[in-house]
Structure formats: structure tokens, C-alpha cells
Image 1 (cartoon, rainbow, N blue to C red):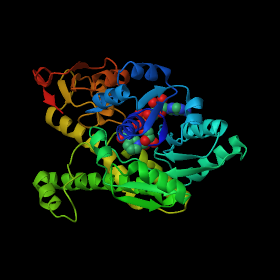
Image 2: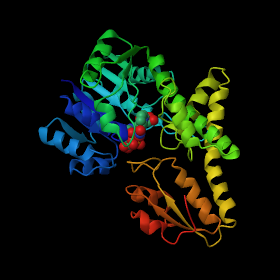
Image 3: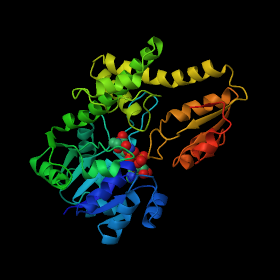
Length: 382
Ligand code: NAD
């Protein structure tokens, strides 16, 4: 049993904190967002994730999980600190480390004995060393600590299952002691531990996401060829996906990848490669193909309907994928404003993401949780 403080209670922090609590650790999930902490303390979830509410309630009742905005105190009380704050994309495509730096500073200011600081957030190569230097600066070198890179691979929509039965844990540690502590808390979830250096662990996360994004852009390029030559991409997908060397996952052609990870992580990897003087042509093409897919869909609509002026278009799906209310970088966020600018009347459907979508898209369209009501009397459905 370890005393764990999770700093950043979003999709990653809340799910992994809850799962570590469920496997027998004493966990406090912390956040600077006092409102989020108040709601969680009342049992209200800030996100939709299948099975999360039940697991949170169970562990709060058991006394293994609590929530706090008093980050300084929780740092002092913990043996292991997980950093799970956001690392959004800056306008240049780099990963923004502002929140990570804030957390490292408050860890440095509150260090009161040996602790293991674990980065779960997706961060560029070299960030572990940067975190180490910030903590040392604010602690004035008074206390021992170790920094570990332990990138997160959960997928929204299946996050609990992915954590409880993780295919592997990647642990990049600076000492054997820290490695053993973090390996121990992963034991209930997986036997596959990849032991690596800090830098290797950091790049594994980007390599994994870039590879999956490459599969998506590859099948979308194949789909675009299929449409021109009269072939069926779904059969091509089945035909190649049954080859175990290829695998059938991430081979569905469509509107391209979105979400809070693939767009920002492919852009960040491109920056990492540029910073070390390498021209990563493949990832540039992956990003370009992906951006083109949204346009492809709109082009098809224009081809079918001509002008969109006064046409009723129903858009099915606002989140970037099923079983989540996360709308970050969702294709719908680009497509709906485009349709309304062209004079279309847009009716949008999503079973769980409407509240989040309204915050971004506002009242440019009408919303419904009933798919049939949405498509009724539409000229086209996307
Ligand atoms: P999120 O935006 O859902 O949550 C981040 C949380 O951190 C927010 O609640 C925010 O209030 C809090 N925060 C920000 N600054 C803070 C501070 N100084 N102190 C305390 N809390 C602070 O983000 P997320 O989707 O959970 O992603 C977190 C990280 O994990 C990112 O680096 C992301 O790339 C990575 N990741 C995400 C996923 C995913 O599916 N969402 C999967 C794997 C990895």
C-alpha cells in the first residue's frame, strides 16, 4: 500500500487515481479547480467515463479515495506523487509545459522527505530532467527524491478497463528504488513492465500515438484511392486487418483522428524531431492527410447537395469518438461552424457530449439526444 497524491484530476488523473485506490493504495486526487473538487466530494463526476462513477463511489465509501484542493498538504503527506495535468498544444504545435512546471514548483516548495515524482502527463523528451531541476531549485537541494516517467496509455471510453488490465506499464526511472516502488503499484494491473530510461519512456508515448495516428491516416489515404477506383475500403480493412502483422485496430476509414491526444501528440513529435535536427517526413504526411479528411467529408456533401443554403444537415456524433463526452479537437467542432457559415440549418446528435459541445459550438445548431428526431426531415446526414 502506498500513499499517493495525484495532481490533476482530469480524464487521466481521476481514472488512474481511482484504479490505484481500488487496488489497495491510499489515494488523494488533487486539482487547482476548487469547483471540480467540491463536485467530486459530493459524488458528482466532472467527466463521463463508463463505470467511473461507481468505482469512485465505492472507493470513497471504503476510505481509500478522497479529493482535495490543498495541494501543498497532499504533497507533504504522499510517498508517491503522480503528475497528471494537461499538456495542451501551443499555437506553434509544441507541448505547453506551464502546468507541469507549476506542479514541479509546488512539489519543490513542499518536499519534506524522500518521494517519487511520477509524470503521467504526455511530455516531450527531456521534461523529466526539467522537472527534476525545478524541484531541486525550489527545495534548495534539501531532500532526496526521484523522478519517474510513467506515460499513460488509457483510452477515453474504455479507460477503467484499460487501466485495470493494462497491456503494459512503461517505467522510466532514475533509481532502482523508484523503479521498484512504481513497478509494485502496477503489479495488480499487468505483468508486462517495460523498464527504461527517463528519455526512452518519454518517447515511447509519442511513438505509440504517432504509430496509431499513422494507421488511421494510412487507411484514409487508401479510402480516398478506393473511392476513385470503385473499391470498398471496409473490405480492404478486413482484408489487411486479419493479417496479424497488421491487425484490425485503428484501420477504420473516416473523418480522421481528433481528440485531446493524437493531434497534439503528432504535432509535438514533429517539434521534437525538428529540435533534434531530424526531418520526420512520415509524421508530416500523417498530419496533412488527417487535416484533409475533414475537408473530404464536406466536399462530398457539396457534391451531393450543391449549395448548402437553407439545407437541413444532421450531424451524428459531437465527441471525437463513442462513449466519451470529450469534444477536444473533435471533427464536429470544425465541420458544424463551416456548415452554418454556408447557410445550412444544422441539427446535432450525441448521446452524452451535448453539454460539452454547447460550451464550444454554442447555439449555431440545435441539439438532440434522439438520433431519429435528429435525422427526420434532413437533406443529408453526416
Ligand atoms: P484534463 O484536462 O482532463 O485534466 C487536467 C487537470 O489538471 C484539470 O482538471 C486541471 O484543472 C488540472 N490542473 C491544471 N493545472 C494544475 C495545477 N497546477 N495543479 C493541479 N491541477 C492542475 O487532461 P487529461 O485528458 O487528463 O490529460 C492529462 C495528461 O495526460 C495530458 O498530458 C495528456 O496528453 C495525457 N493523456 C491523456 C489521455 C486521455 O485520453 N485524455 C490519455 C493518455 C495520456
